[in-house]
Image (tube, rainbow, N blue to C red; front, side, top):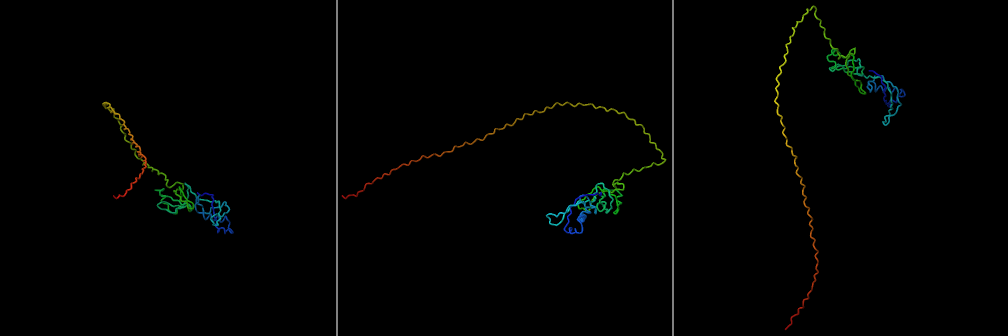
Length: 272
């Protein structure tokens, strides 16, 4: 379950850390930052064992661009050891708690194993376990996330031979010894069984069913296709010719001539 790993990590040193350059080296300050941030936690490889980190190589420090923090960033290649249990891994852990759900076992403060009671029903050895005892456990499933403080696993208890407690061998049938000097009892002889002759069953007379005259199917009259009525085209209304208004003949203006008649002058009557 314990295995070495090699990975890269980015470390940023603050101006306060840079003030220690006069007394400590860059590697010492960077290793302190790595131990502070990674020891006793999970990364993508598993649970990092405290005190196992070593610096393999590092880059030159560069100031962060655009953040105005004054931090100096180093890219470091780190080597260490991690716990990463796979299915079937067997470990020896200490029982921390026991309740109706089952047992809670801790392995090196890195892996916490839950042993369900449902996987050990009817097992007296499981019921007799108490907190504080050390037992062997086979891990069946594990999960963790980055920055977790432990790995959570599920397992079953096994004995020293590696056999799980829930895999019990089938019980042997008890051997019953026959009592001594038992008189032999002879089985009664059965009389032979005489088989009665089997008579063939009488065949029933076959009654022929009367032949029915064929029924003629009624002849269906041909269905005449419906005669479609001719579609009358709508008569168009006669178009009346426009009535032309009579053209009035121009009235000729007659020229009237005014004749003036001179009246005769009336003479006064003469005295007789």
